[in-house]
Amino acid sequence: MNDGQDLWLPGDFAARHARLLADFLANEKPTDLTRPEMFSNSGVLPLTGDWGGCTGIRADGEIVFFLWDNPNDVQIETDPRLRNMALFQGAQKFPELAMLIPPRPADAVTCDHCNGSGVLPEFPEIKNIVCYCGGLGWLPPGTPPTA
Image (tube, rainbow, N blue to C red; front, side, top):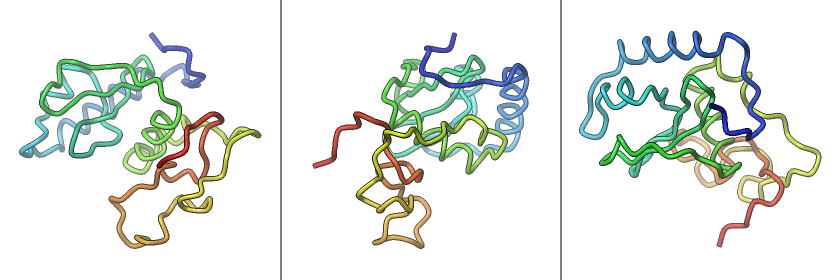
């Protein structure tokens, strides 16, 4: 069940999710970190991944996280910044998910790491280095600053 984090889902989202996950599983090549069964067992469509783990979305719209070395311990992600990052980055891989990216709220803060561009000025050509804002150029109200 969706955790009430204001994520709008189209009525056919579960079917879309199932199709996207099936396509992903059919085309995913196992790596040292990831194996397709991690996603088929959990029902998680991966949106982002880094050295520690994976953030993804389930068919019910929950944004979740699990560590690569413990894929059966799926946790609901409640941090708005991380949820937004996952949705924005996931839509880069699965354009059909772009409709889930929340609009910028009036009280959002422009990201001071990228000055609102969504791209770190130090690494504009490196696509796998993602800004603190996740590429959106803004941060949800109440997001704590970084050190």
